[in-house]
Image (cartoon, rainbow, N blue to C red):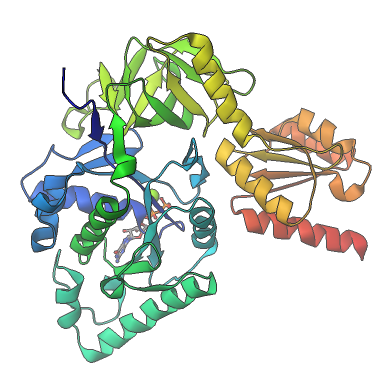
Length: 452
Ligand code: GTP
Ligand code: MG
């Protein structure tokens, strides 16, 4: 057999940004445009992701994208809700996303979660562009549905144009405050060195052709080699979310970035304690909207290949962690795969000290990000775990010798009822937030007050 077993997978695109800045709307718009192009069904809704094939991108982008210039199969978009942490998007070697779109509302500008997203993109060295969204809200805007930005820009009055320019230059200024050199995308030559800003409207579709063109070009230019995978090989992925589903028990929403996963595979999944070894019970995809009235929201599939989002139902997943690795065993010694998963987990594990604060976070990636941030402030950590704040965390925190360390810092987690009560009794302070630097600021204020 002389066939080349490798093939090019779809690049994974994370869509990030502050709450309500328009991430979901942007993806809805792309899906909607495809329907108008008469290509409904070609875009497939995956678990936690939307796959847009190259021919659809080309029909939306019009003259801007000639499919003959590309050999990547399209783009897989992962929508991350602003109130969630997108730090789950990690994989072996760093970022799960190959590229990212940072969505910024032109009226609202940079906000806490915009900055947090930027930090994570910088740290993981993920190439990204900025979508300056909601340009249709500039007073006096004259919309041309689904037009490329250059075209729609020309049809605005001078006054409207200068209002838009002001907002765009503010965003460019904000990026430069973060040591990123940025410019309007059509002026950017090297997207590795400069951040391109694409003005868009998820409402009118203006700029969406440009956005897709830039993303496609960026992937093709800079990451083609990284997209070469052995599609038929054993699957490798990351847990996005651990979820209870009626009729299926605990399931893991997983992004597969390498190989294939089949409905009779054995998996090794990173867990709270030891790696979990389990057999797939079902692979589930969302049912197409037209069929949604049947009893299950999901349909079973036999096998899926990277890159894709898939829900995996299997026994013993209760201890699985968001952000943890998932690996298919298939034709390999189990031990070898367990070792791989353990090595990957050890790589992310936070170093703890004899004394320090307790840190809880919703995912492995966010725990890692918290640990990095605390290291910069030289605050030691005695215990770092994925999960909600529980009474036993309070017990640990209460043993700290220094009052400044009788503290639990929770990122994107809940405080279980009895933990709150316990903390009050034991004089332990619990801080929670969904923005890391705000969490640290709250803690620092507390320390200032203690020292006053
Ligand atoms: P979270 O998932 O909560 O973080 O928000 P999101 O970033 O997904 O924002 P979403 O797409 O839900 O949009 C928030 C609001 O902004 C909705 O009411 C949208 O209709 C509106 N919106 C989004 N994009 C645009 C746009 O381009 N123009 C206008 N006028 N409104 C928009
Ligand atoms: Mg959303």
